[in-house]
Length: 134
Image (cartoon, rainbow, N blue to C red; front, side, top):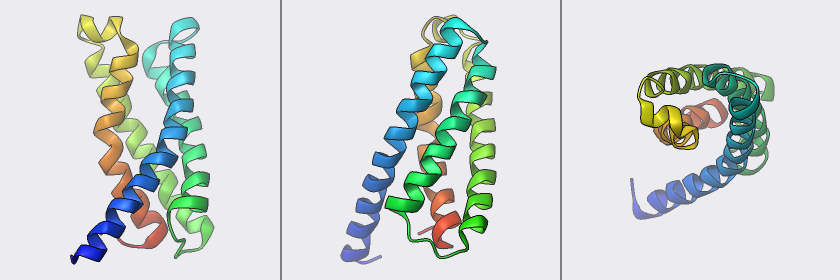
């Protein structure tokens, strides 16, 4: 990859991170409300991550990626990718909640799961929208 391509990739990741930050803020807020008041961590994560996933799709379709597929096809691939990601993050949250520290600090638990998934999500969403990974 040449210098110009590298810079474009970095800028794309910044745009992705920005759109993801908005969706993640909603995800985090909803997760903490649900886990703090109503539901166990795993159920709270599935609900909050699903809402974040929908917000993320619309932001990325509009502001981040060039859509080189039918929107319905991009949505289905993105949805599948997100469902797998939600499964991975839910597993991470489940495993971390076996440790007392993480049981007591759900915000940190959610942050660890989200951080691990950032790069998985970037490359899989890029494939969903642009039909390529790099």
